[in-house]
Length: 123
Image (tube, rainbow, N blue to C red; front, side):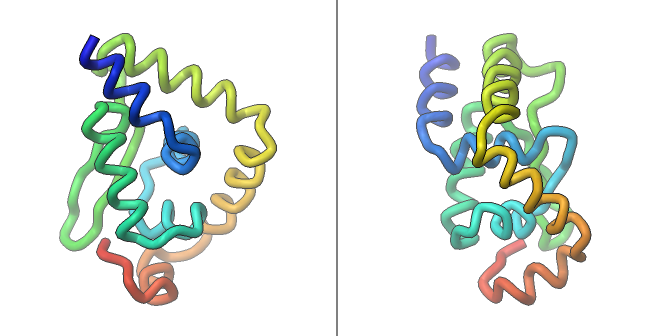
């Protein structure tokens, strides 16, 4: 029950759902997620922390960079089911389509360039 509550609370925010969808098939730096969502890096960092606590995303640090990816096949069934559900729902969603288009442009930029542009990035 605790896992289910953590997952539903984590997915109770539009920007966290959008972040989950961005990670489909990608490991992204915090700066890349910030760029697509258009939020402050501290806000996105907090959102990613909540998703990590719910085990929906995994994180790794490499130097000053924080990278995020969706939970893998070792995650509990409830986590994997929630990810599949979110991805399926956003595949048809207008905002999901806009985010995927924006992500394509962001992936063409170097993360260092994004950090310089954002000025406050902590990755």
